Image (cartoon, rainbow, N blue to C red; front, side):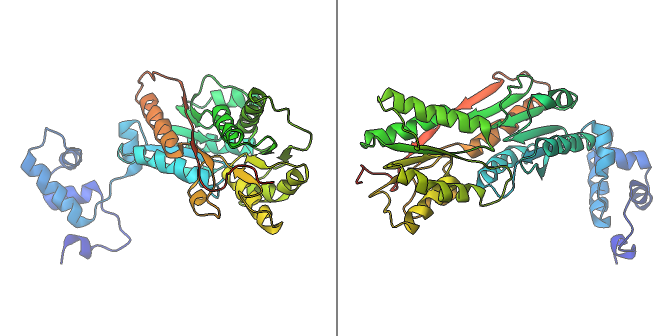
Length: 352
C-alpha cells in the first residue's frame, strides 16, 4: 500500500508531509518543487516522484502570493448564447493556454452596470488582466473603470464613447458594410434596405454609415421605409433572429429587392420571413449578413456575409493583454482589422 492510499481521502498532502516521508527539511521540499538549482537533480527527482505518489497538489493561492500573479485572466462577454463570442473566446484561450493562464468567463447581459460589477469582481479576485468583448460601458463609468489596476483590452467595443486609455482590437465595420452594399449594387440592385439593432450602438452606427456611403457613391437616394432598426435591449438568444423576422416584411412592402442586415442572426430571421411569405431568395430578394458565423454555411440558401475575423480578434486581444501584463510597450494601441466579403447563394441580380 502506498503512502497516498494510507491517508484518508479527505486529507490533503502538505509539503511538511512530503518532507517527513522523504526525511528532509520543509525548505528542501519547497525548493525541489520549485526546481531550485540549490537542490541536486537527483534529490529534486526523488522528491517530485514522492509528491506525485502521495497526491500532492500545489496551493494555488500560495503560489500566486510567491509569484505576485494569479495566472488568470477574466473575459467579459455580453452573452454566452451569441455565436460571435464563441470564436472570440476560442481565440483568447488559444493564446492564454500556452502562456500558462486560466480564463474566467462571465456575461454582462448587455447591462453596463453589470459589466462593471463583473470587472470589479475580477479585480478583487486579483486576475492578471481583463478582456472586454463588445463592452457597453460609456463615459459615465470611465472614472470607476480607471480605478481598475490591471491591464484591460477591448475586443469589438460597443460603447459610443472612446476610451483611449484602454487598448482595443476591432474590425472596420464601416468598410465591411460598404463592401456588402457595393456587392448588391454590382449585381444590379437599386432598392436596398437595411435592418439594424439598437443594443450594439457603435457597430450599428458604423455599419449604417457604410450602407449609406455605398448608396451615395452609386447615386442612390434611400427612400423612406428602406431602413428599419429593432429596439433591442436585452440579450435574448433569439432576439436578433426575431428582429430580422419581424422587420423584413416592412422592407418588402417598401419595394426593396435586397436587404443588408446588421449581422448574420438578423439575416437568418429575414430568411425565415422570406420563406413564410413565399418570397424566393435570391430569386426575388437578396439577403446579406455580417460576421460570418459558422451557421451561415448551413442555412438555406447559404448566406452571403461579411467575414469578421473573430478568432483572430480574440488572439490579438489576448496577445496584447500578455504584453501589457509583462510591462511591454504595445506597438499599436488600437488594432483595426479588415473585413472580407464572402459571397454565397443568398445574393443574385434582382428578379422582382
